[in-house]
Amino acid sequence: MGGIGYRRFITLGNGLLLATLLVLFATAGLKSAKPAHAAKARQSTSPHRRHRRVRTLSWRAATRFPRPRFEAKRIVDVHTAGAFWRAWRGLRPNEKIVVHGVTFTGEATFAHKHLSGWAEVHFDSGTRFVGVAGADSNAPAVWINDVSDVRLYGGDVSDGASGGKAGTGIVVYDSSSLSWWGFRVHDTGGGGVFLTGIKKASDHLDFKGDVSDWGHNLAWDSHPTKGTGEQGVNVADANYGVNNSRLAFHVHNGAVGSGMEIGGSVATDGARGNKIYLWCQNLTRVDANGGAGNCAQVWGENVTRNEFKYLVAKNLAGRPYHTAGMYAHQSLATDRVVYGRASRTNLNRAFGKVRWDPHCGTVFVNVRPRQ
Image (cartoon, rainbow, N blue to C red; front, side, top):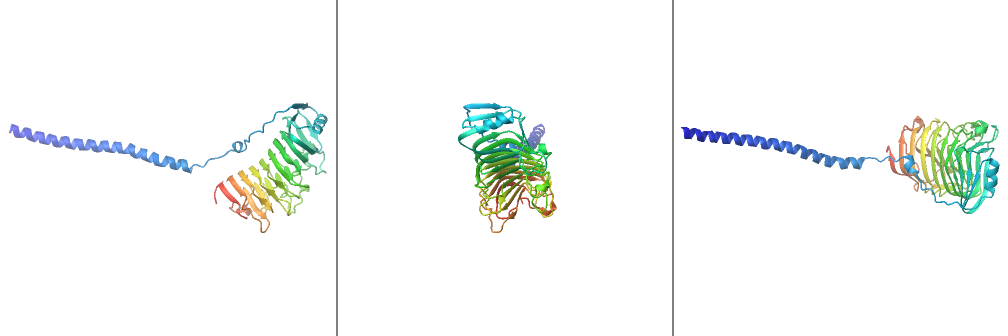
């Protein structure tokens, strides 16, 4: 009995031990399986999330262009408008003019300056171009005509002398290898900046600046619907257009026109081979026919091989990219929007829901939201 009882105890004990071990193994398996499953889930979802992440490109990063190397052999410091114009007339290659706190009144005209090498002009933070006094003149505050191999930096441009009732802030004609970085244009009677060619195309321009609050005097707007013809930046729209240039503008807080209008109306005019960077904010003009409030407004003919390298638009009555004004039988198939972002656009119902206007065949590479 004792032996049998002992064997039965051992057998029963073995059974209990086996059952206990099975439970322990099962529990251990569940515990070990959960971290393994979680690790597998992390491995499978993390790359997927990285793949779907959309990189945001800032204006500062997009337009951080390398500054051209320049070693001035002669530096001229000026403190009056008269001293500046004397220095400008005598400007030679490898020279630099530094302007300290000068206010330029009237139409500041930079004309017929052709150099065999680069020269620079630096306007300090206190330099102002305030335009023509009175509201009866459509003259720009700054007119650059037929200038090459000059780099300008800085400067504040407005129609301050006329209370914002005179003409465009900056007008450029017939110039090449001309650069102006770091300017600010604001409070003008006409448009902000006008780049074009009258006797020949302007080419190899390099402009980077800030444009806001233009079009105070709609008497200068020749369009039937006043307020649709004065743009923050106007490119071409004359005789010979603008080619092979880099144009970077932060255009904001405009109650008339669009951010940038680009295109021409005659066979010799147009815009070809330009690289464009646009950041548009708060363009609020509402027109029943959808003729204003856009960031990039492409129209007319001969708009070819242009790359909108950066186009970001926020709080617009119109579209980030609008092409409805293109003439018949024109193609935009060689034009591209490389990087585009839009939020709170098409606030004017006349534009519908289409943000990136496909009319005439523009290629959209990386734009959000898609449509």
